[in-house]
Length: 115
Image 1 (spheres, rainbow, N blue to C red):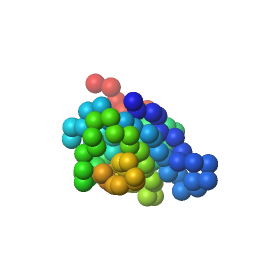
Image 2 (cartoon, one colour):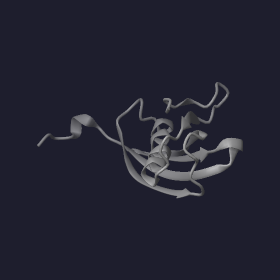
Image 3 (spheres, helix red, strand yellow):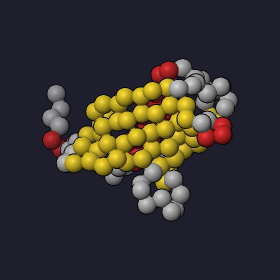
Image 4 (tube, one colour):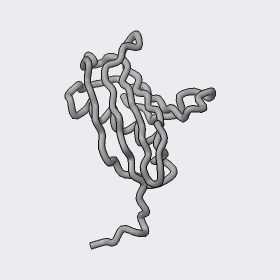
């Protein structure tokens, strides 16, 4: 089962987030989703509305169904409305299963005009 990401430990001043994850399904779309979400949390999506601008990912190995994993994400800075993040998916023993780099864009909901 997935857990909501949270700060990667009280001593993590770098803004890292982590979540335990056990994959029931290990398809490419599910693994990309696992790499996507924590990147938004470390970019600050909880404090302001954001959308995913771009994401590039590499999958090195699919976890086995039921294999416990950890997804970690780190902010890489930003400028203006743009925020960059890196996410890693780690398997048993800490081996890197996949990595993603993402660009998040902050949006102003008041500026969006309904159709």
